[in-house]
Length: 417
Ligand SMILES: *Cc1c(COP(=O)(O)O)cnc(C)c1O
Image (cartoon, rainbow, N blue to C red):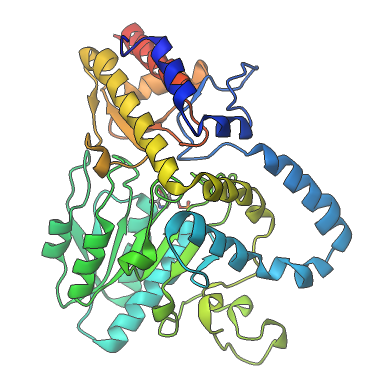
């Protein structure tokens, strides 16, 4: 079959064991309705709403908030950050219970965990004054660490990376020394989609006596993560990307059980204390993962993500990864056939073993093209310099959708030439 024929996309959809999951997301069932995108390539930035969440949210409003009112805190809400955290641990990030919690935004959780880590490291050895990170990490990760370095009189040790690839284990080995307190990296790079060798990097950092904080924003829900198996110390991740929690839904934090007792996070709030309602004269950190939360848990923000976490657990992250690889391989095939001749290059790893769930396409006209595509209800996003990011959220994206979207990229580029 001609690799670019639409029939092939239909055949891939028909053979996709996870294909029926698309029907469980609003707007993803291929029905054409006004304003509903023809192709949504941004599920890695803001996932689609699960249909089950409409009912879950309405039921919550009527039956829990509306009826139980403040009694809801005693009944289930207080435990929700831990219950949902454990379910993410189980379904998506390879974490045994008691180590994952829903907290604040990714940015705030990065700050809390990184500050706790560097303080503990320096208390153990005052010479550990460096934090290793890379130039191409997401801005918030770099900014938070810049702030911590200034606040604590530490130095940032930057790894320079190829923006079409990502950080390698060798680069981390060269950057970590007996002065390294912490290594912070993204498991899947937000720009290129590069998938880091987290097991090897964690080992290398530990051999140098450093702690590792993994940013899982573009991993959780799309690629298998094995925090316990890697022996990772810390991790944070978004829930509004592949976990479909909705705009601004709160992030999760993972703290390895072996590290919890030695880490003190800097936003000491009443919800992180041993006995929340004792309201005692001073802060006493709770034992366990509770100490990493600060204020009142964002209950409403934890509703929609529960439906996607349940789907991930049901489908299995390994099957999701297979679908994800099939989607990115298909996107690369169509790009080579249709877009290569128009001057588009691929700024993502070609080896699926080194690639997460998205592919970035480069061409000088991509900024202009993005605006044109959005007008046609084809929704990728634009990343400087000249990158069109094609996010293919595995449970909610289809092959025909990918075909339609990339055909629009081809036709749009041709019209701009
Ligand atoms: C999306 C993303 C964030 C977002 O942080 P927020 O605090 O939710 O705005 C942070 N880091 C990475 C690597 C991301 O991809």
